[in-house]
Length: 194
Image (tube, rainbow, N blue to C red; front, side, top):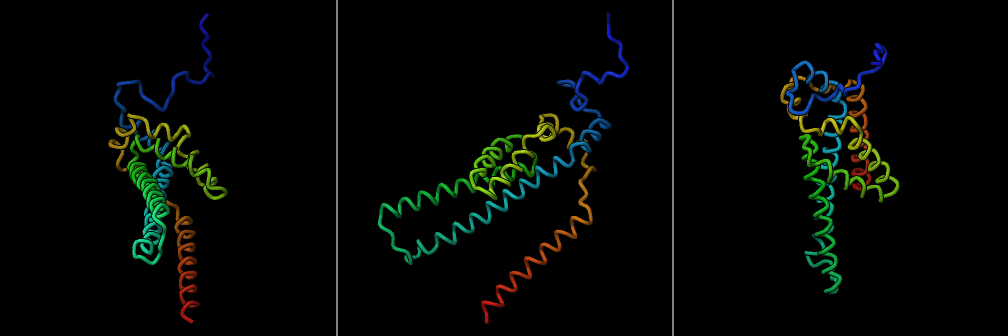
């Protein structure tokens, strides 16, 4: 007996077309709109990774300059260990930069290094644990898997007109945070001048 239940849900996944079948424009729009927030979150992680890599590299250079300028005398084995450590940290920042650029462009290859770097970030308790956990959640959920699917690039090509719109409230909150940071920076500068 064949079960003919009109209330039963569909047995085939609705998100993905059949293998090898091109995505129709209407379906591409529906899929893109359903995954737009996931796209934005992934791109935001990429931006944060790029910013972290740039700031980390600048900090590494700021710490390294006094050592190379002769202001800091270190015994030979220690200086070699310090240089090796700086090089290792520099490679980590390069990995953050490369994976961040890949995530900004929604490249499939960038997901794995970003997951590894986020997992390593879990060790930096408590802030790294929180941020790494959020990054892992965003990168490993079902919608992210769909965004990194091979046919999603075709969906992006068919729907360039669909864009994420940031709400006015988000821009207001962002502006307030930036204003507070600028005020704090000016306050610190003025207090050092007196």
